[in-house]
Length: 336
Image (cartoon, rainbow, N blue to C red; front, side, top):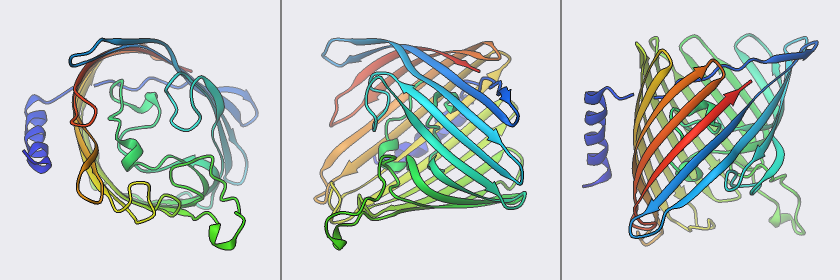
């Protein structure tokens, strides 16, 4: 069954079930001085992964602890610095059990609708959030490294109208927050820039559609990311489609790939549940699969209090390149 037919089948199934997911927990924004406040979260989990025909691997501990410092000044100037501790296997750039500045940027609101920011900030792209506080389940799809931008150094501008928004960024790299575009030994060895542009439309209450284009000179990569969501009466439905093309100087030279997800979520009172299905495939220039995966995820949740969320998850993965597996997880997420 091809990917489009599978997408149609799962879309019908999710809409029929009505699906169901986690609700966000509150952030306090504790004031510590004039115009200065702090917020953050602590994310802990237990997980077990059982490959088909193999032994289970289990893990427990702190996944992430983050403290965000926020400053609201005069004249439309604000700033944010996020400091993160990432546990084992939790950050693709900085490594295991490390503390680092995740993002740091200054924003100038030119008008109520138009703003500019400079520094290190997260890409606008992607339906699934980078932080656990923005996810509807415990795990991400795992395909963000192919189809989303990451933390970036550069300048960005955004305009937010009543029913639409446009945004754009010029950055040293779309995927590597450590990239500073340092000058190499010869003029033709200089690092290249990355660019991101996006459009969002919100035609009616609860309905949002976004499309992004990312091009990165360093990795010779072009990405299209599109998603749509609809929230009504406690339900949230979302769908995403992604496409990537690699140029001749990319690590996967002249390769390409695509992927999608379908998600449905319901929350009422302290309870929530999410259903998600995703599928992706990355190919080389000859059309051979270099990475792929699909998974069905079900994730119930319970809000212990405004600042404490418990999330469970069962996930069934299938992959020609990585093998099939079943995984279970229990997460405790505390925000402040």
